[in-house]
Image (cartoon, rainbow, N blue to C red; front, side, top):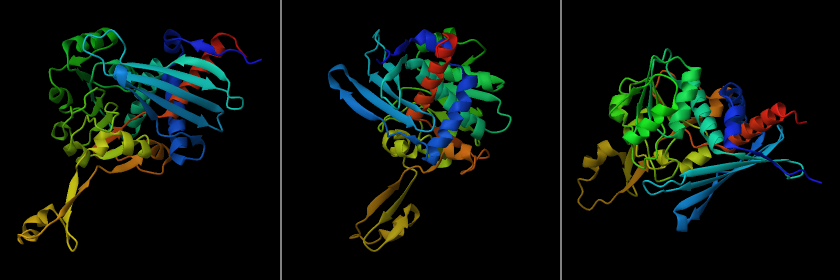
Length: 347
């Protein structure tokens, strides 16, 4: 008879999951994902919840050689201001790959925050400039808090700055962290001169402008996970070398890439030319042309850099556009489950 699944609560996950064990496992998983030879993971699927103004997302993953099968259910809601209900609620189910039976049902909010922040920290390890001194965080929610935790644990910044939309959010952030932080009154003030910038907001319009960003800085962008949302403007997306966790996901889920307009060409049936040639080409009043608009180009997946297949362009301005992967949840859930077994003396 199949044993009932273990139920692991949020408090238990917080005690069992640590960045020291999580980061190296995520690096290995990201490399495997980019090689596409040991993992199976589709782009997340979405189910609209129109009556309650939300969406349910499904994120399955199978890591054959590691014997890990899991899926994460994430419910995301556009809550009214002042609502006491959570805007995001996640659950990860860990299964036995051979039988399909459930091994554990694990609260997923802590996993989501920690694996996202850990992936951002991995991007900073690979891409941030040498001797980075200033970290700026735009956002004050759970993701901002987890990013503060892992970045201050893994790196030695001389200053950490934070900016948020509201005083209430700033107060919650300050009460949740253990360590020094400089509170800024604008996003521009926070990022000016920063070596590493984290954007972790729920904004649908750009909050980070390219002309604010120090040349050679690294940006880890974890908000704007919808195709019609953006955190970064066209100037930044044009100037930066763009890395992602998944090319496939970025092209269907990332508004920062899908909506970016970093170049354009004009063409007719017999001509094709850049914007600089427009005046000469349109001297004929009967001339009709179409416009071809170019999106930001994805240079590499983070896993390709980890594996050595693509270079880390530390000397340039870089962006890591993170959307989150099912394999990150799978690895995290397996680690939590193994830690739970160890602490409870389970076989």
